[in-house]
Image (cartoon, rainbow, N blue to C red; front, side, top):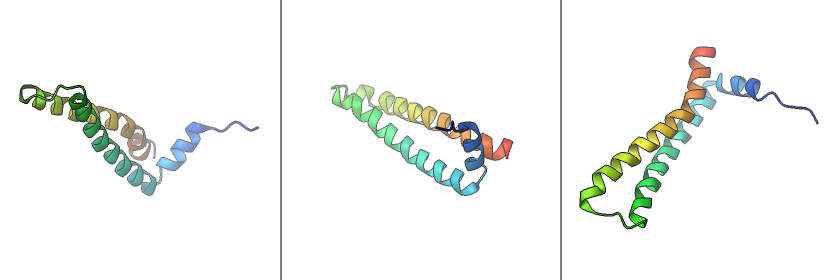
Length: 83
């Protein structure tokens, strides 16, 4: 079997604005899903208390932004810097 060049595939795909826009939109949805999941996981563990709720929501937003931004960095770099 032939070995695929993943770097070349990523550069070719993310040089196209349609791919970057769709990927970015999907990652925003993933970020929102992560925020909800992280925040809800604390509630599932019984840590739902007015004293902690703001901190938990803040942590959920921070975590989801960091993860989504990390995955979004590659297509934005390829599109704006390499392309």
